[in-house]
Amino acid sequence: MLKSLIMKVQNQNENDNSQKIRLSGLDKKGLEDLMDAMDEKKFRASQVFSWLYTKSAKSFDEMSDIKKELREKLKEIAIITDVKIKTKQISTDGTLKYLLEYNDGNTAECVLMRFDNRANLTACVSSQIGCAMGCKFCATGQRGIIRNLEPYEILEQILTIQRDTGLKVTNVVFMGQGEPFNNYNNMMRAIELINTCLTIGIRRITVSTCGIVPKIYDIANENLVPTLAISLHAPNTELRAQIMPVEKRYNINDLKTALKFYTEKTGKRVTIEYILIGKLNDTKDCAVELAHFMKDLKCNVNLIPYNPVNTKDSFKKPDKKDIMKFKYILEASGKKVTVRLERGADIDAACGQLKGRIEEQI
Ligand code: SAH
Ligand code: SF4
Image 1 (cartoon, protein in one colour):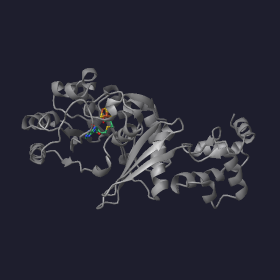
Image 2 (cartoon, rainbow, N blue to C red):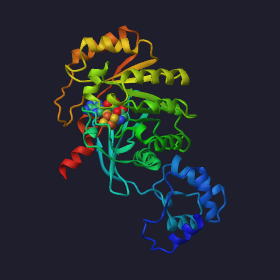
Image 3 (cartoon, rainbow, N blue to C red):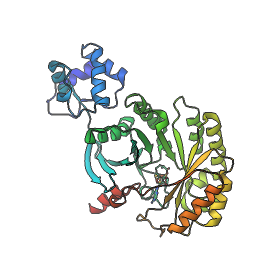
Image 4 (spheres, rainbow, N blue to C red):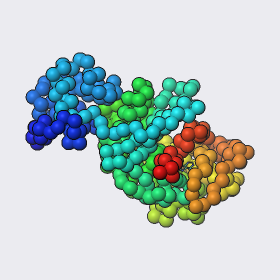
């Protein structure tokens, strides 16, 4: 199969990349099969693997320890990637935001967050083009779903950042566009590739979901279990249903049962994400109710001040003093609480915003 594909590509115009074999996304075994079909020795696969994933090579010419003849042969039949950087924004706080263009012209964003006081470099990746879940406060949710991303298209977001910056990403969060659990199989394969090809430990990979309950059970039963973050955003079913349509399908009580299963099965703590929307869910009563909800759950809390986006509903940012009060009440209940720093505020680095702006310009 692979051999006939190679022959087919060889007979094409060398400048036509459309039919060439894409190396990005091939694991060790995939590269070994390719070398085998090219009648090359097996160890060449390890060399190519290292150039692709450890050294984040942009071109075959960089692969200096691979003999010229093989590099030329590779150029003839293969490409490293077909994903392009469409735009790149740099924030004054060092956050980088990329809009990537895939080979069908669709775009998705990824963000690199640097924290000055830590060696961590966290990539925030998208799992879908758009999202079907329709959360009222979310720019992506307002536009609906276009398609799922392939495993290599998710991996490419991290590789693109590494190629462009020359830096090594240390942590990955699935908190860009899309609902990862609606693209479960591709997400799991991407996690496997991130773990094995980019050698990012599974404890450094976090998946954020709006609460697709059956998939929480599924992921708890996987061999490779990432950290789970849950977009809760409200302490009771009435308020949650107002801002998150998913509540009508999988309610907060079933969600909690699933989260308890996850923590007990895996021994891991979950992160409860809670967007604070001014005067809507940031009140003292909400904080008390949330503390009660989390009482018997092994979790930390991440409070996210609402980032204004263009939606039909007129949500407001929370007041600073309400954020602090909310945080205090949760801390008093014994939970570890962080308030998400506003990263890249000057470049619209929140969920779905860069893409929205570009589409508005068009
Ligand atoms: N679909 C998944 C992951 C992507 S959204 C999920 O919902 O968890 C990533 C995070 O960004 C979620 O916690 C989401 O609620 C948050 N988010 C979306 N719109 C936001 C906004 N306008 N301000 C602040 N956070 C937002
Ligand atoms: Fe989708 Fe997450 Fe946005 Fe909700 S918050 S619409 S689940 S991307």
